[in-house]
Image 1 (tube, helix red, strand yellow):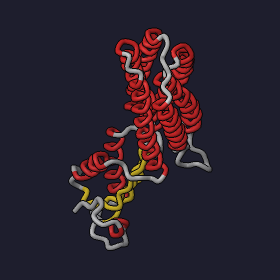
Image 2: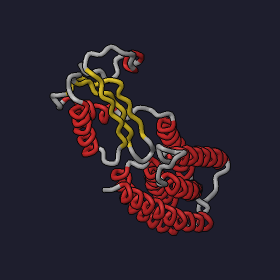
Image 3: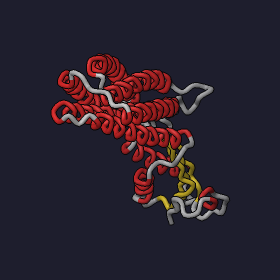
Length: 307
């Protein structure tokens, strides 16, 4: 797929999430108004945060897919990380809000009315959420978009919350265990806060240029090793620009080769990397093998040294 196709797919996924969030928030608010269930209310709050987060993600994806220009030569991909941080804040605050209300209801329980109606509404919500999560999971795997991954995480939580709410309503309606409503809400809230931590961590990693995971780095090292005309590699750096990977490395080659021959070796490595990671940005510098110089690898002990 081309970068244009990736961006189009991301915009479609986030637009779908905004529509679903609006619909889910509406039906859950109506269900809470009818039933007065705290579990449904916690799920409604979750949907409200999903709606705000999806709108923020929509703006971030629109901004992040803008092409690079003279003032932003790496592009705008990291805008997705900023949106993920805001989403994490929304999720964490909503979780704390529901915990406070849940603790209050432990001491002052409220009877749930029309639980059966609430079950039907939540089953409908569950069905919509499943459809959206399946679609967003596909888009996230295709595009590696942090904003889509964050949005998909929200709706994965939504799937769990909807399931927990349905279970809560069944316990309350058929077994008369009213405290299960509060227990389910508290469980949902703890999961929301944990999910907020994961979202924030991923966003901070991207903003601070954390190295890509070891599997990706090992794959690049393997591409270099398999070329018998390359004697080594050093100062290998990688990062996520938000929508594409960025790789920078120095190749160690025979100093007697011509500049054209050295360029051809670097081109071969670059093409192999692009086959594995399409649309990635790659900078390769050729060094004569055996030259003595100050290197990043000398400062970072034990990183990416190929002998």
